[in-house]
Length: 82
Image (spheres, helix red, strand yellow):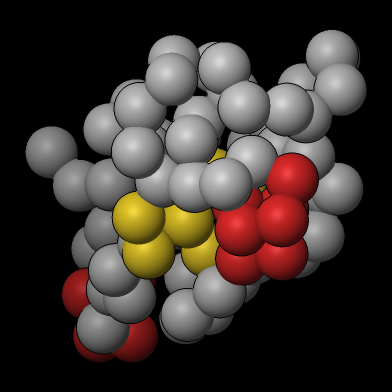
């Protein structure tokens, strides 16, 4: 099963296209931009407490059969480390 590659930061709603090297995820694929991951969250997922690491970039040719998600996810609570 491929990573979901969510299209936005859950904190600030910044667009994070599948080729972005500024997307960070936890093991549950919660997704954050590098600014929120580093400065707001200190690389700790606010949802599960797991480590945030840079999301890998899926090669463009592989996006044809395994496209990125279009479902935007936003936190209802303020972003802070768990």
